[in-house]
Image (tube, rainbow, N blue to C red; front, side):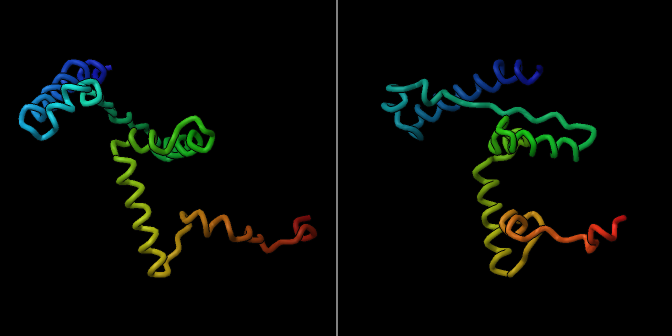
Length: 128
């Protein structure tokens, strides 16, 4: 709850002062600023996510929440303190680079889901 207090008592006023300074210095149009101050003052703060004791379970629960439609990838990325657009751009670039080098990883969903499941090598009769 400390973040809630910090954001409203410190971050919001600093953001307003910054936007006003930008308008006064000409960085943003003073006319546009005067016409719609609320649009310039609008800001969303994302606080750091609390770390769990077991990071594997935390990641698994995030994946389940995204798959189940309870949370978006954007929300999950923001909770990590990262920029979703920058993260997606890095992922896309990594995939392009891996493809150009002929690299495949088990995290590549297109390849993983297109391959048939591997057989265990046992027949039903062998199990008895």
